[in-house]
Amino acid sequence: MNMNMNIYEDAGRMQKEAMDNALKSIAAMTKGFQQITAETADFTKRSYDQQTAMMEKLFQAKSLDKSMEIQTEFAKSAYETWVAQMTKMGDIYADIAKESYKPFEQTAKSASTTMTKVADKAASQMDQAAKEGAAAAKDAMDKAETKASRAAS
Image (cartoon, rainbow, N blue to C red; front, side, top):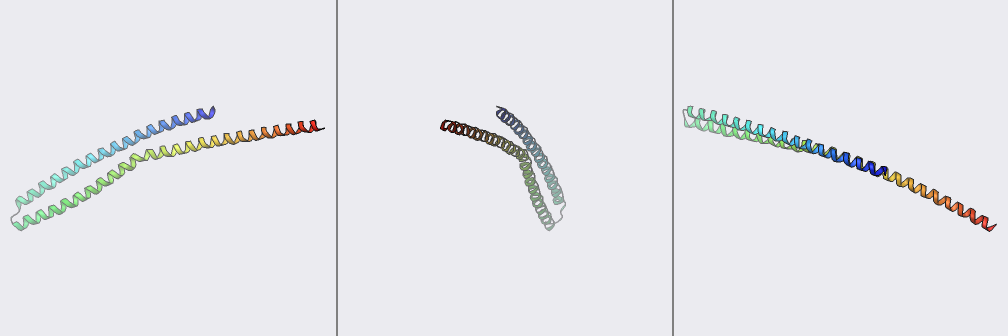
């Protein structure tokens, strides 16, 4: 009965830990998505500012060659900025995945440890029961032999 009670306590503890870790995971995801939102808003503002600056330069250009140079520089700069932003966003998404999964690693580790302890307890109790059964069988055999020896004499 004691082993069953420990199993229920361990199961309850594991369930509570799993729920706590699920909440930690959701918090990590929420924080990550807030970071993505802030990064996207910042990127949008910077892009708008770059476009505005480019348009001002374009209006001030005195020649077609200078206009082409401004547009080429802007296109190159916009592309490099976009690639850098997408790389940064990819890193943020990877961090979100890692941080969101981290609490579940602990749950799996705890579950494994708990199940190992339960299995060890069960194996120990079964070993003890087998030893007691073997001792009882030996005792019964000894009594039977003693009884048979007395009956033969």
